[in-house]
Image (cartoon, rainbow, N blue to C red):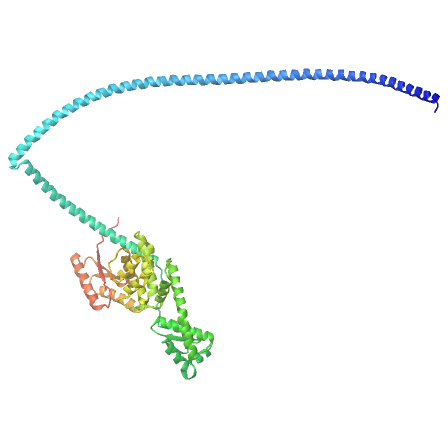
Length: 518
């Protein structure tokens, strides 16, 4: 490139720069003018907003000042009213204090006047007392002169008379109280015993000497008899019971007076019939197995009875021994059922008398456990039962009740007495012991027939299971003295003509009624 070309390029560049600078200056001035106008507009708007905001704030401040002024005025009025009320209260209290001060002053004056009057009265009474004492002394002197007794002698005589009269009144009062106490005690005792008897609901069953074993078919009877009767003979020898095979369909009868032997024989027969194999060797084997299983059976029976009466915690040996009582009877009465009845009744009686019902039930269920202890008899079973259960750590009161039941020792608590009462109630109720119902009813009819045979008897009733005959007589045919004689005559004839093991009470009722109508 030549020098001319470089100069031309430089000149062109300079002209371009100059032109751009001129254009930029013109455009910048115009932009600056526009910006100034916008700035002036914004400034005017801002000043307008400031003026408006200033006016709003002034209005808010004036409103706030007005509201605070109103609140202050309201508070001032409230405090003013409170002060006025306090001022009124103070004025009222001042008035009350003034009135009370007047009342106190008046009372002080009244007290002073009363005190002065009391002193005057006291002085007058003292004078009268002196006069009375002098009069009494004078009267005593005159009485001593008239009676010939000194004052001390007269006092002693008077005290003796008063003491004798007091003794008579006290004796009469004691008699009345004793009579009322006896009547009340008898009534309460009857109520308690009747309540206990009402709460005992027992199944009274008469056990026979025969048990029935059901058979699947009549063909089984031939197998029980065996060839030429060898099976039935072996069974009777092993079990000790009589086997009765008759026309009763699908059943054989086992007869024995010992309920335990009869139960063993029944279970043995049922096992043989279930198995189907019946021969002498199998009979002995089944019988021995049943005897071993009876221990568990006894335990189940004992646990069931104890559960029914709500007793727990006995040793297993005691439970098993209790179970054996089921197969023991006394005069036809099941001993286990009897002990359960005595236990429940003793518990009820103990609860009525605020005694320990649990101990009473425990003593009741165990009071005849000695009957199934080895070598027991009717004369020593209480002692044997006591020695049997003593080793199991029972309560001393329960042990004492078992021993005291047989009169072997003195009772240490009322519970043994309750056991005897419950025992008598259980034994003497109708149907407790084996007693044919026909003979029982006949005996009651006999008592009434004996009473009806006497003249003047209108009605007679045998009550309390034949222990009492209540007789209603005609009041016009017998007086009180004749009533006593009639009761004695009827009692003599009952003793002579009626077969009764119990004492019979004869009660004569003589009633007079007067009836009129208006």
